[in-house]
Length: 403
Ligand SMILES: Cc1ncc(COP(=O)(O)O)c(C=O)c1O
Image 1 (cartoon, helix red, strand yellow):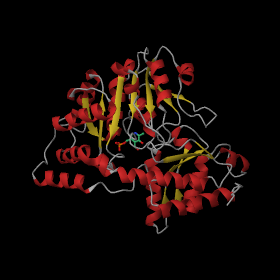
Image 2 (cartoon, protein in one colour):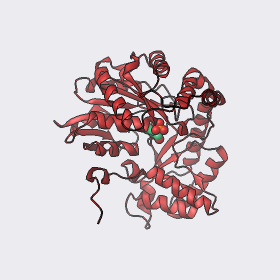
Image 3 (cartoon, helix red, strand yellow):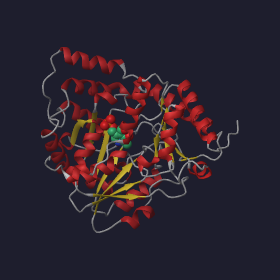
Image 4 (cartoon, helix red, strand yellow):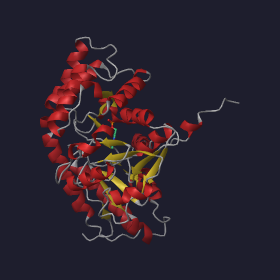
């Protein structure tokens, strides 16, 4: 008999998006033409100047351990970015650079929360937030999405019923994954005003910051100085500069938090590879201009996806004005179908993959069954073909198609 495992870690769920992506790859290896709408990454290559900067650094011998929490030049460049673009003032010691925003978020949960603490997570949520909180021994408290999907944004009224004496943190994500929506500045400010007198950590995941198509996405800390001393901005390079495989993310926040997150890194991954840091520095110098065209392409694909999905009048959608997702409400169609139990988008997504060879992540993964997430960061032809197959799968279970 084996010794027992960690009870805390055994409660964690493996990432459903990673699992679905693996299943799609397996079917593709068997020769099926799979359309993969499940991945949370842009299909663009990393801009060449960024790649060249890393190659040059490798050739110059930057192949040893780096500085825990990120080298000073990179942290200074992040301070400048936050000052210039977000009107937020930090010192380099308040910045920690880690192996993707995911590692930063994981270490933040370990650094900020204790067993017994409750952390508010609005649904639909990114798959890892709840698991990070569980790994920290704290309790995720999911704030359900309002039934009126036309107003999915988080408001003080939605938060209030879930607050207890044990509440210790709240996760904010705008633009959001999987929702693909942006909290408009006036609503963000109202939420920030409500949170200003709460003694909680506010963790704001702003990784899709540049992908806001119908108006600006502004950080709560920029709008509400009252939250700043408990506010932690998380951002990363994966989405903004098409650098998912480089694994670079960072936090900016109160120094005691940054110190603990850095300590965790010294005891786990040690540091970002120094040649990767050089690529990241180059991304901060030129990446935004270099990616401007790609942002327009994403906006065009959003419009294309929405125009096709509108052919199915029973599908509802959250306003898809940010990131590169459309979060589609299948509940009306599923309710008509004898094949699926109420709101069971998980079984529908299995059938969609196995029979129609389209991979999409079901809402169960994000705390809202009955939905399915489309990632439209794919070529137009793929988008058109994949949505045709999705449409066929929906029509098969009784959905109306108008064109
Ligand atoms: C909302 C959100 N936060 C964080 C991450 C993690 O990004 P990274 O690649 O920097 O680890 C993702 C990736 O899908 C995401 O969607």
